[in-house]
Length: 322
Image 1 (cartoon, rainbow, N blue to C red):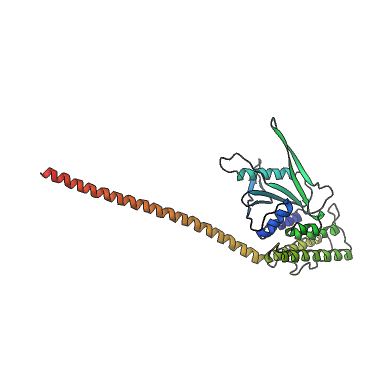
Image 2 (image 1 turned 120 degrees about the vertical axis):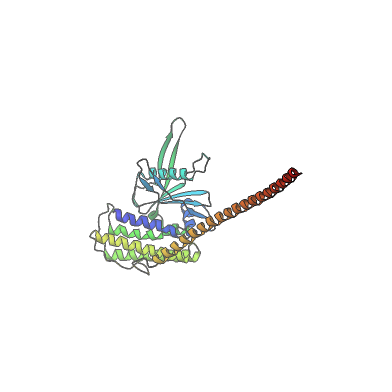
């Protein structure tokens, strides 16, 4: 089961290669904010190290407009300790984001996105923190249980970024609540597959027409949906299930555009790196020019002093000869 969780985790992180417009809609929908499309989005993810010197990676940290911090974690199953990890990640992030000389820790606003529905997932998780002799606080982390929200509600909140996880509705026919294999009714599976396919395509087309996502975003969402569906069925077959693989969306069972996307992203990263290097070299060149100018002025001043000394020596020699 760990392998399939990693697939969902990678898919979740891959969503954040979408446009800033799509990500801002996600932030607005999850946190009830109203950032305009021209707002800036910066990913501030960092590796952190715990007391046992083990490295940890939080899912996603986002800084909007250079001021507002958000922390998004994705979970496949209920984890009672997730609130502890979110607090730990938030603390490390606050420490690393602290400005020099400013003794003020700013924790990002967190949310845990549960990709499957379980009856025992609460609306929020709470961590009680006691500062002895000072105060007690309740650190609250809201839980967003994706499959508990209708497509209409998701559409109203413009949460189109999460649409690939609609394919998880198929898992209820493939596994029971304990993760054991089922042999789904062929007709029921075909009907649900048809419904999921229709819902996803309609949602993507609607949001593309409304300007909530770009055309490139739409292509990526279709590709990620196809890939996630493929991985679910392959994992089911590997565990002994006999469900046949059927194409879900146009473009079918692979990520046909990923090579292009990765190539473009790689070029963008190289371009940004080249721009940064050019900026550094330009600044250094400017400093060198200033240094050369200063040294030239010094040489000029020394030459002037030298001429004065020569003239003074001549004066002294003339006086001595008299």
